[in-house]
Length: 259
Image 1: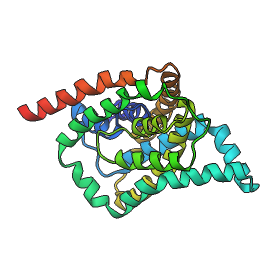
Image 2 (image 1 turned 90 degrees about the vertical axis):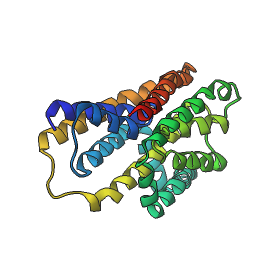
Image 3 (image 1 turned 120 degrees about the vertical axis):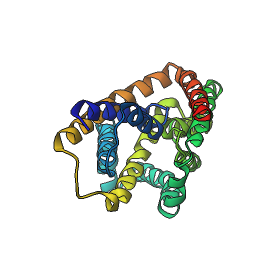
Image 4 (image 1 turned 60 degrees about the horizontal axis):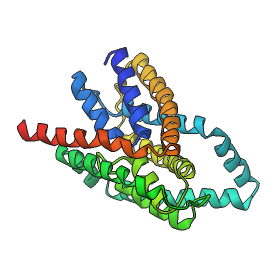
């Protein structure tokens, strides 16, 4: 893998991890278009950790308040952290105990094509969801709903960020708060996924240059993607990603049918 290929893959990962279009499918698609095969999971782990850094950078003030408030025993901070833990449980349980079955889903590429269409319809539904009177902050019920949505997003082609935010909007949470909760609940999810992949890391590592370049590209693009995500929510233009996902899903299914 060359330096520029690593940068391209990092940009794709950083953008699609947070924009509601599913990062797993796009990363595989980009590798096929570039005609490269990445040995092992080291690069995948590196760019995922880089996107975790993106979240911590964008929400650094809120993360700092949560950490310091929790250490001081403040009820509000402890309660919010507790909600994040609750929201992480469904995907964590599935990832830990059904890892092999989930990975087997990736063997059927048609699943991703259908899932792109499903994600598009979910995003389209935000036109109605955003007309509801929103609550200021998520509650326990919302954390459970968004947590189940995150578990559903383990299916390739189902966007984690899109599905969780849509769930939050339909549960009555304001767009900005739904996005913040979605991205913060991704921190333990991404970290946990990286930890689970540690046993699969190969001793033959990729060259440091491409690895670093891809990670930096993913982190920078991730910050831009998160900020764009929030702006689109505020402008109630979130549903427009469906215009991208529907042709993508149909085109991919047609391609699979013809090949």
